[in-house]
Image (cartoon, rainbow, N blue to C red; front, side):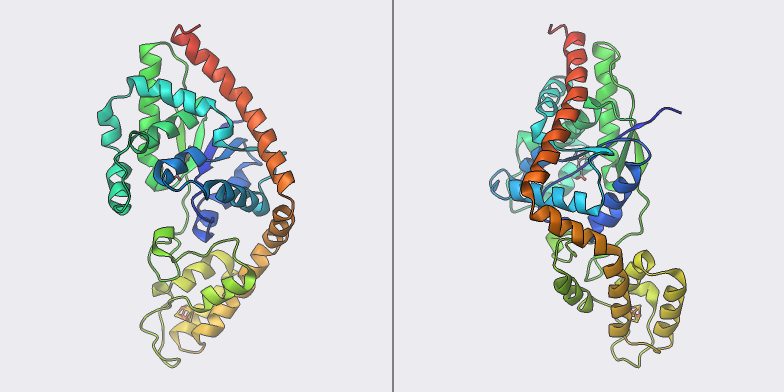
Length: 328
Ligand code: TRP
Ligand code: SF4
């Protein structure tokens, strides 16, 4: 059985939160032991929406690198780098842009959706339309077999396969077909019960100090039917319980659910149990975060070395691409 190549990325827009952790980061940590993995911080992608306000990208990139390393990504086990450090991403994106029909990009659902979501900003740009094409370049540059993503990214992978096929057809076969590695994660609600999202301000940033995390969890929304301590609740209608399902052992979960339904326990007690288990889960993360945060040179070195390793693969693909295009 040969090692499959895995590639994924995350954008440095603000701090990574619990949704990112449960939905992606935790899975990456596991995958690094099973496959040849390339993980990167997509700072060029961040530019597509933050082009007017670029001053935070570098700090966000650093903090994201700290989060990834603290969560357990091991630079001996995976290649971790910053997208803009490997200029081949931009070069392949440019080459792809020559033969990608505008219609393919215009009909990617996230294009209209995100433009609607970020209405206040002018996203009538060439770069924003090309966002998924840059992602296609990211993936094809490494000839990735598997791309771990959430459902919202499936259209981007479909486009990636179409672009690869078009290249192979126009010039010669260079690119294999990538497959998604759908991360089937429990939907993790935000602190107010809606989808966890930076734009709703309902996230739990991983890097929050422990006291802050406690405060946020203690203020979380619960089953709205439990107005008083004596009202019975329904765990299925409570975002706190979704977190229990991730962090609290099964037997304890069952006990809490029972206590909730019978009004035997209060929400504060229930949340305190959750915090105990979350604190346990993130103890190693918190320690490592402290170490990396106070050692920015080490983080920079890890990213530089990661970029060097990534560039080897990227350069070799680009050489093949240029030769297929007869640009030699
Ligand atoms: N678009 C992805 C997201 O928003 C991030 C991303 C950029 C990505 N390049 C990628 C994911 C390549 C997988 C592969 O989550
Ligand atoms: Fe939610 Fe727990 Fe309160 Fe029930 S007891 S409503 S599960 S916080």
